[in-house]
Amino acid sequence: MPFIFLANASSAASVMQGFITPAIATLCGLASLAAVFFLVMGGIQYMTSAGNPDKLAGEISQEKYVAKHGEFREQKAKLHEQLQTIDKSAGNRLDQTLVLLELSQRAAEIYAKRTPQQKRLIITKLFQNMVLDGSSLSVGYTDFTGIIAKNVVETKKLTGGQK
Figure 1 (cartoon, rainbow, N blue to C red):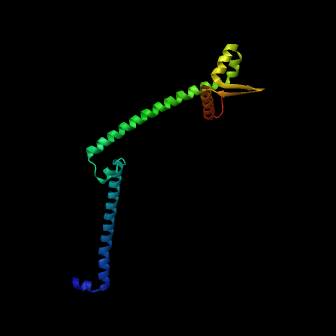
Figure 2 (figure 1 turned 135 degrees about the vertical axis):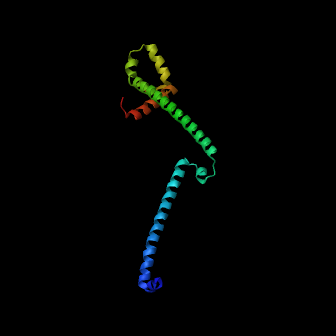
Figure 3 (figure 1 turned 45 degrees about the vertical axis):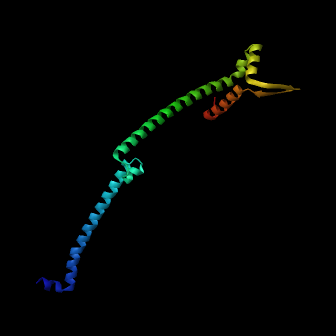
């Protein structure tokens, strides 16, 4: 009897379609699950490699990986410590520069209250190569004055030109 049933071509096609369609759907579902599994596993390997291509390729042993990871953590800690030191020194430098800026802003007021000998001393510390040519005076700044001027300009930039 089964041969008689399959002798009808249209019914054979529908029987085969009824068998093949679910089989293909099942195989596609399994292939999709396998693809998702491999994507997840690849992502996990990538994340645990910490950017080390040798670890991704499987060319690095677990011991070597742990040792390298420890070295990187030590380097990170040292760099973090250095960064904190730089931040503190920059803050101290800014404080000193602000004091110099304030002092330079009040210099005329302070200078007016000094004795002639103190004024001469201040002038010699700030200027060099003073030349009086008729009614014009030309001067050169000492290194100390140059540093103060540079710090004042930097501080004005940092504070937006405010006192």
